[in-house]
Image (cartoon, rainbow, N blue to C red; front, top):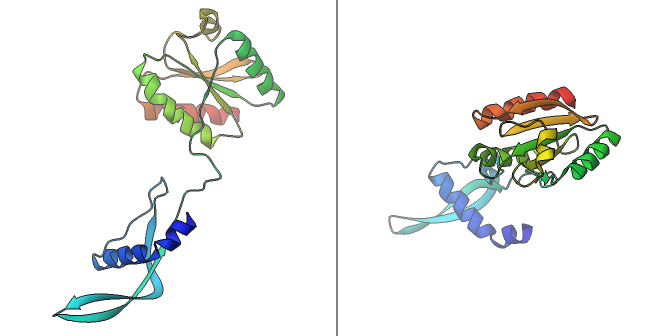
Length: 189
């Protein structure tokens, strides 16, 4: 990436000069886009003024701010396919004294589908503290669904010490559900 930036530094400089002339600054968004700062570093640009070419000294510095690539922005939730697998996950979590979050969802449930990527982003936030899983209730034995005591979807549960401790039933707006899940997680980590 650095080679690409250095090979195209004249393009970046021209863009920076153009942006300065337009009196616009780019701002870094939460997703970590590039940021253009106007600070001191010397460079020359030329422009035509009344049929004469005038060299103008510009003070511009271009900096690229990239997201922290050492931390994931999203973690794929692992599927639980049967009761035996759930038992193994709960036993492993109990050994580590770590809670487990399980999203009980269905592939036909629009709110479930909308909520899953938001939970995967949240999984990246709590990457070392809690493990996130999901169960598609239509693809697993109904005994597993009964074990979770699931009646509505999506249902997000925290399991700790081999048993279900708390749940959020997500029949309302996704951002509210995420906040409720966040509060629920804080109680158990």
